[in-house]
Image (tube, rainbow over all chains, first blue to last red):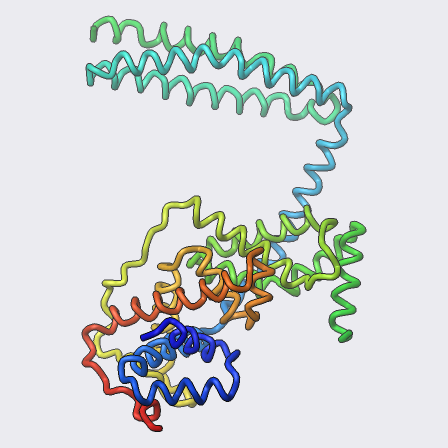
Length: 188
Length: 203
């Protein structure tokens, strides 16, 4: 079967074939059983697709969308209301926190990679890294919950919180070391 | 210009000026259209809801860049299509197995115009099968098929919505139909081969 013939079949299904070309198509199909079968297959799929109904959205969806939009607009308005100096301070604090976290991430990776040859040690190293990350997230959430009542009137508190992150990470490391030291030394 | 188009344009212009009530009118008017496209692209109700929401949020954020010379619905569906295409590319596809057998006793023939209870069950099954077949298509092909069959868009309109050429869309549609027909045949492999419709063999 030629490509032009196949193309004509598709164009017929899309309703863009002229009357003359349509007649020519059917003449050709009458003389070619394979082509006729091919066309019938395509026509069947075309009919199935055309008969498949539209899916209706859940009734509440439009309301939900508008509610989320209202929330997004309110958040954007609050962010835009922050003075430029506070926004700059926030960005600097975030950069400092990420810089402080880098050695820790590198150390954690080194620990895991060096333990790779010893399954038991790898498990312990991985557990400690995960424990640290979970504790860090929990600590951040607690800190933000504590300062949230003050943020509206004193937005610079957010910058202060971010600057506490490096100290918090060191404190958590000490906590993990002291809490787990007896078990670890017994296991080595 | 039809009155409905004038009203739509007024809503769009008001929304561009920041009128949230006008934007709400747009949301209520087009939620079904966007949801249907997202459902056909993504295959599940939950994902379709999420994608619909994201689409309207994107529309809100980019409303000022909407060109009034262009159909608003086409622009909207273009955003929805591209969002769904990106989503499909990012996620791990969980392919609906085409090896799943049809319910026993089902045939694959389309019935009369008057739907009977058995026919309603059959149509539901066919709808499920069509969605499973659609899920097999690459996202670009799927978007072209959805816009063609559920929105009756021409090649030019689909090309505009998907930011490509008319010849590319023709190629995608033609190839998509071939793939769907092959997949559909695989499903029907257990059904004895029917003779070719005699109408097609008449001179």
